[in-house]
Amino acid sequence: MSRARVPQSQAVMQRRDLLALLGGVLAAQNVRAQPGSPPVIGFLNSASKDGYAPYVREFHAGLRTTGYVEGQNVSVLYRWAEGQYDRLPGLAADLVSRQVRVIAATSTPAALAAKAATTTIPSLLGRVVVKRVQISPSIQC
Image (cartoon, rainbow, N blue to C red; front, side, top):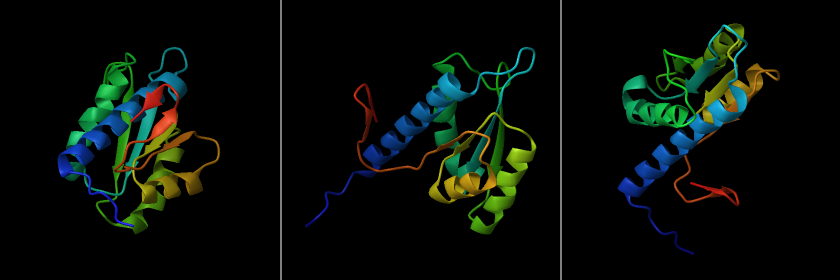
């Protein structure tokens, strides 16, 4: 059985859609702050900041759709493993120690590290999937 190859441009668009959705879900569901203090999101990824910049922009776009703007009414703590997966547990533990409201783990290794680091801080464990998926009857990405 052969699998159809997804064009690179379509794969990138789907990643962006996923990150925009991720940002929106975080803002809508898990990031409500205590009065007087902006919520803090932990962003954990196994890649490097430079290689992931376009997707971080889409994450910000997702936050904006629900009224959150980094530096104004929400803070994001970024942790990048720079391809060194053995750094992920320490980076996840750092986010937990800083008491972020939610962890956005945007790669499978980062998701596993976040899951192992805490059972009390909600983690939105997302990974990029290069195919169209239906999350619920009203949400497709």
